[in-house]
Length: 426
Image 1 (cartoon, helix red, strand yellow):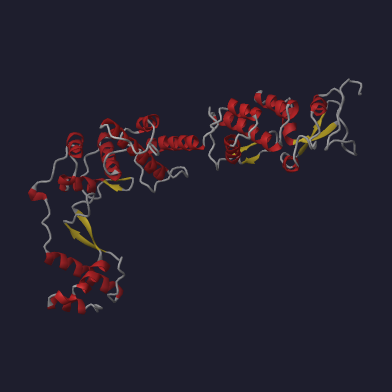
Image 2 (image 1 turned 60 degrees about the horizontal axis):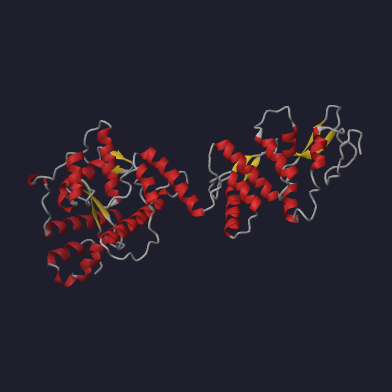
């Protein structure tokens, strides 16, 4: 036993060789090394864990007051340099995991990364996306650690009841979220709050993504679950049996989304609700009600076209939609003298023939694919409920030509002649 009275145990990396002298007896580094069990003990570690651990931190040399040095891992060096400022929880966790109660390398690295992630991000719940990484490390051994995958592994072990009780307790101290479904929901709620704050509503189109999260699909699924719950409630209120509660959203989750945007799940088309909210927000911010096509475009929506379409398609709206537009936007249905004259069959034929001539002039033939469409700049044209009163007319030229071929025997001679002049293939 050395003079200082501290027993020094051999280590796989320690030993006396040229340039590497043992630490002075009684030093802090010797104390840590003396109490740490042999890392290659087969009763405590597997070969895979040893291999992973050996390359995890690199090595460093600590020098004692007398100039002696000892080669240690980078993580240990970061803790043993007591002259550096650090969170007191870091050395405490290091001692507990590596000295007092050593665990497998994979577990130890994960739990350390989880603790650092909580401290550095300020989160109070251990909820990391599967693709989430943590860049950190002790001392100079900073690297990217796949923390999300490690947490997913712990969830699987917990679900299979193979996770040791001590490890469960460690994760519980970090407020681990055990359910993947709950974690996915929490991630979606966090992204929904960010999206609503940036856009002024939570009515994303299905194709929308935010910070890499498919928030549009997530919102669509959430609306489907909320509507299922609403249908079940109506059945119960009517005293009728509920086929199944599967897929129905809980009231607590609906409350979470209602707090973000009370109109997130309308009874009508989500696109209509999104345009309404954009127009309402525009007016509330001091803007004038957009009534001209192309005058105001927000988040890809032509608000003037939408407003005009509501006035001209008033009869197609639900009574509650009409009430909303009347009382919040002061909209009224269009008068008869404002409405465009309905096209006659001759006018429709003329528009389609114009589109065919436009295609022929540009391409030099009339071999039109069935799904092809032509755009004609024409006034007084509505293009759907969210269209305006001006703008391009969309002509489904390929479909029209196919239908004309089917009715070729009934066509007037002049119409056949007009198409023959364009090289029509009957």
